[in-house]
Image 1 (cartoon, helix red, strand yellow):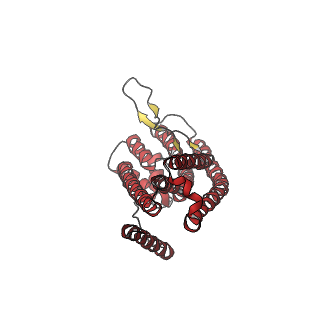
Image 2 (image 1 turned 90 degrees about the vertical axis):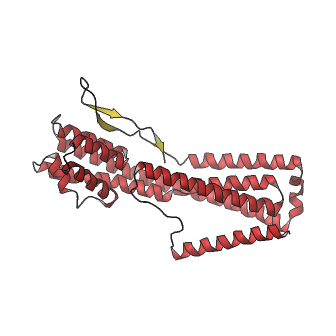
Image 3 (image 1 turned 90 degrees about the horizontal axis):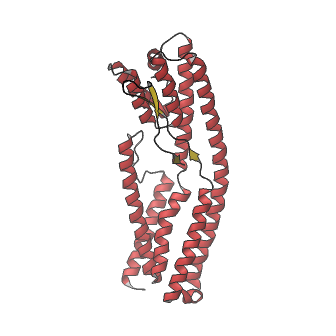
Length: 300
């Protein structure tokens, strides 16, 4: 083993131990930003993406130096980049479920307040302090914009953009119509929206239960394969010797690509398509008043 290889392996082991210690202590290794604006979330996402690429390249370099096979390093880069994406994301999904439930609870608060013959603005003001935690900041900003004499429909549109949730868009559409005096029986509308949103929460919880089983099976498959490869590399290197040739390297890349494709397809089975966002907007003169703006479908 060369000095460079020893240094690289030692650095990798040291970094792994530090991460394990941080995980056991519950320390925050990478900073997070809660309730960030859309552009800030994109910036944080880009930074995390670059950090993940750097870590993946470092893992690939260590594997390449340890085995002497470029194909093994390439597979390691792909695995280190893809596997966290495939088997991670539980926190974001839990956050989405919590936000969905918060939208349902806030809708019920608005309904109960408006049932007491209060208007939309009074209902919003009454829910600022008691709004569910996942959207409390956004509700506070909505009330602040309302009190700053900004038109309520515009403030509601910005609220929908801040919350960034299809169910919230539907609630905002109903509130915008109520603020403009269009339609009737908004208490009944809000009741149905709250029921629909809570049904979505129950559906997402059932999906998460099925997703957990699928991810457990995927982790077992990946873990068994990874352990087998490492064991063969350490204890029976001669068994893998045919892969050291140029042809063997090509076959190794093909095997790795097929396995990666299988893992990706297995993970995609647990994804669900989210509905397109719907938010009210004011149209120009001669328009129909309240329209719909779609922001594209998303997957989670």
